[in-house]
Image 1 (cartoon, helix red, strand yellow):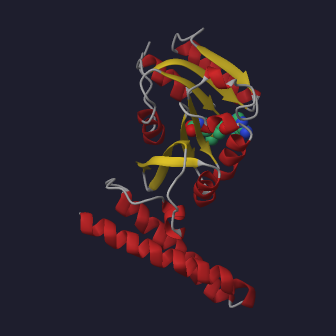
Image 2 (image 1 turned 90 degrees about the horizontal axis):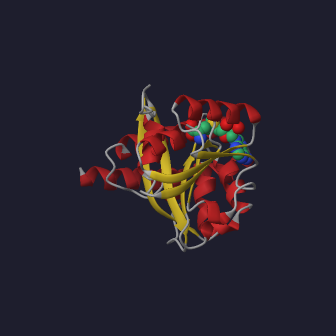
Image 3 (image 1 turned 60 degrees about the vertical axis):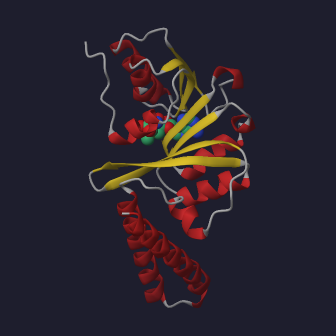
Length: 234
Ligand SMILES: C[S@@+](CC[C@H](N)C(=O)[O-])C[C@H]1O[C@@H](n2cnc3c(N)ncnc32)[C@H](O)[C@@H]1O
């Protein structure tokens, strides 16, 4: 039997943010590939695999059986962190979900901002809403990473409770600049997305679109400045 699970680049990025010895809770685990891989690699001390639905949890149980990890991962059928007690996990992963869902899950579990708790969040959409929500709700983003699968880039946020310095509109959209080699491509993709959105709004020519257009123009200008800054680092 293969004793190693080959994670996708997106899940490998998340795995690399998990500290050694973690008591992990993987919320929205689906196949439980992440906790199973981390147990096999000896990175984590314990794991709870949680999911809202029975189907994904059955897949998680199948993975655990396949890799001979029976008894080493606990399972919870629950919404977010509602079935997990704070003392059961010091590291919480919420990956592969929309930013709003991630914020809703954290909102229902304020213990996640207590000292000693680490969060690894991997939003698939509405990332600016999630960054803003974290900032406004006393969480700090300690680090952001990027991973590439084909032409698609993914981000993962390492987060804990605490105060974060205010972020600009552009930083809320793309995170703060880092020397990550994928950062230039990430900024280019976002500049393209905002340009296309502005093009659509210009064509609409509606009065009501004016405030949205103004906001997007500000975001675009901020993104272009960040790209220039990143280019000077190269
Ligand atoms: C796209 S899969 C992501 C699986 C894995 N975390 C990953 O990143 O590859 C999303 C999973 O989240 C689960 N999910 C969605 N909302 C949830 C919630 N509020 N609480 C727990 N699980 C949830 C879904 O049932 C599904 O299995």
